[in-house]
Image 1: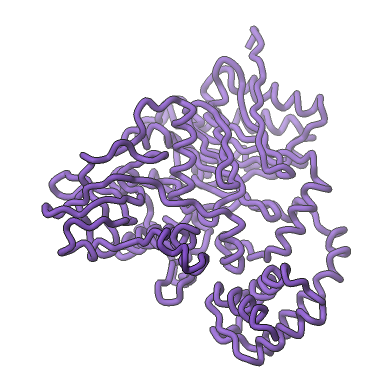
Image 2 (image 1 turned 180 degrees about the horizontal axis):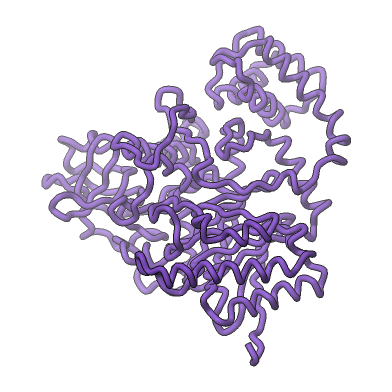
Length: 540
């Protein structure tokens, strides 16, 4: 075996935290020779084997030749099954609505440098320890992405370029080194004196913004993680000259490393399987669509006529969506605590909606309806992630609509290799209310771009402190955006938009009721959305 080939094989398995002995290396070399794998395809081929190996239940950190042989035989058999499976695969069997409380919890392990699954039961109440672990997971997930970035990873650059590398430091390394410049990664927070600090796992340091011209792109709020560069002063402050969001990692990169981990609880798939699924969607399901509506105020007199018009258009144009997601709020105003009249009216509005939907049998026969509650809707809890709508209020929908799903907020749609995250929250206003730094004179378009960038760079739907946005600590992982989803629906009362950032398509369908009826359609074959507008009739 050539040294270059051996180095490439070792590099791939090392990425998965596995070590290779001579026998395992020789066996992999035989596989490459047998299939006459070109030099440029060695790493991608070995990565397929490594991913499948990591999904086996009886693996050790030192690679077993016996398990390798089993993995190789399984991969060999895949090609023989492809044609048969292609005929049997039904889109219906690959569509899953995943609630936040169903997702398994994976903690980041500093010792093993990867994710470990939590097997103990999770609770709504959580614990102080789970709150700390949730924040540490956020930090470590972002940090490992930063350290893999080309500007931070020394192993990816020739030695003569190493002086260009940026080196992360810890707050504990500042002590006694006044006058030196440092780059820190940590969470923006206020100390007991109300001063803005950056905090990491080793401590915190107060920030001095006096020398900062303007921050980098993004919305910097209390609770978000930031990269700050500055000089440590005699006053034990960091006089910062630059602040920016941590770099985002693409879904493909994350999946190439952690593709064997089942973050959603619906079975992990290999990159090979993902690639086959993606091609199948493009070739065989080019006209399949999902509809997304937000602020479907059932107490508004124009909402049901608007939905009826949308359904009529679907029937007239033979354009039946596979999925219709209706996000709250389902009421224009909050229901007063204990007000039976408001609760009854709220329930009757859902009953009227059930009657409307069930009057379109062509739609109900094939379309899945997903209901995602908003901040004003009646659920079992008001803390993120929010539970689904109370079942006692939607009994007629359950009875009359066969493919109805009452989802949590947030929830996820898994369709073949795609993951779509749906989050109904007034995120823009909440972020702007708690901002600690943003570029001056920012227009609306920039704000939308900054919001999307911040949410994805932070790899979290709510990059705020718990006193601003409380979350259930045991289920904080349901708010993670790592690996990046294929698409993210940020349903918000703010203006509608669609932006693709680092390969993730993000869109806000906007409020259904306005000067017209508005919603968004998502096309899985293109991983892209379109804004749809239906005019209001004068008699509506």
